[in-house]
Length: 116
Length: 117
Image (tube, rainbow over the protein chains, first blue to last red):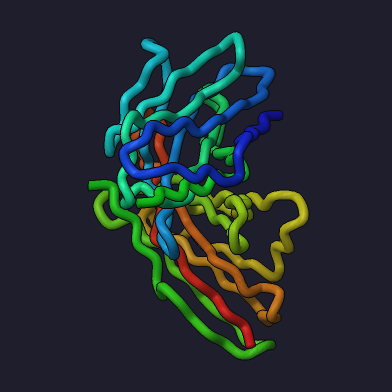
């Protein structure tokens, strides 16, 4: 079974400051890793994903994340945030096996609050 | 591309009535669709996985007779909340996985806000 832990429920940060949203996972099999963003009363939008290859992945809106297999982490970073980045962020994993249905396991979410 | 729509976006119904929510993949075919439930300030909880032409697979603790899922075509899945009660009030989100097995992503709909009075 897989599980995802987002270590911070809320992250307040000032505009133009850097931010890191932390995500750790546990799994007995190899996984794919995802970060999604959810704006109020909306569905989820994919920010970035790690499938294989380079452990540093770049996504939309200036976000990037680094996969660390030894620490089973997939932390999300942005060097300079904007007010418009205020949203809920979810880390998710799914097993990479071909027989898998594609079911995603989500973390609890982190609320990013960007202050002017 | 890869757009998923949901209808309605919000609905208010009286206790005891049934409500149907539609999830459509607009520009791709989806062999698998997922239904999630999200309570305020909480994460998404997977309710069920539906595959076109077969019965849905429900997660543990989800009442299949209460949450009826139909996936009749490669572009449409429906969730019917039967005999709704106030505790069923929630944000329901669907996602669709494209037919192409090389695609690892799910594409999410905008969600449906259900309020049962």
